[in-house]
Image 1 (tube, helix red, strand yellow):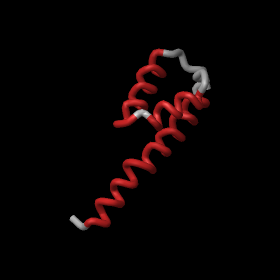
Image 2 (cartoon, rainbow, N blue to C red):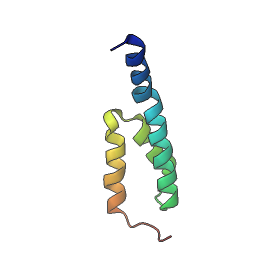
Image 3 (cartoon, rainbow, N blue to C red):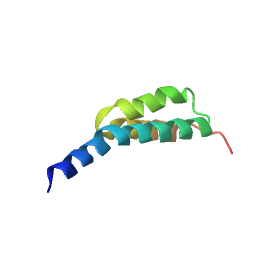
Image 4 (cartoon, rainbow, N blue to C red):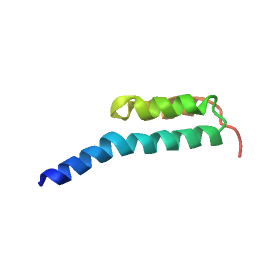
Length: 68
């Protein structure tokens, strides 16, 4: 595999993916009425190895969601 492709994949997984995850969590938390969506977005985006996203989904499943 070429070096530039490895660097591109590293940038995607290390920089772009956490930003997209944080944005998704923020919008989902706000839509479902979860308290403090910015905190959840930061947790999901900054905790390594996508553990923040798993924590968000596990804790959001326990809370009662606001009806749409």
